[in-house]
Length: 117
Image (tube, rainbow, N blue to C red):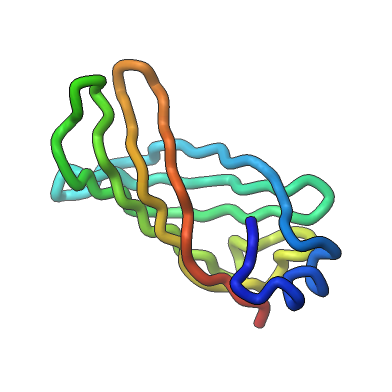
């Protein structure tokens, strides 16, 4: 994770970028054929965020390898930005990428804003 305000980011986290991982799970479907998900986003030694009721929308047809384009909205609230340096943060992330139900592979990039309140 990096910031558009690197000095403020370093002040908050002690470094210019932080690394971690994301674990997601499909929790349901939407009326228009999308999916609802939750994500656990963790940055060891820094903190964690959990997002609930993320909405994934399939935005196109599968390519030759079976990769389906997807856009997800990921709301972050003070109750889901729950630990470490992220406690009390809010905002929204947008994930764009692909899912492949045959291989189980997912590839996404997240953008957006989360802020300490």
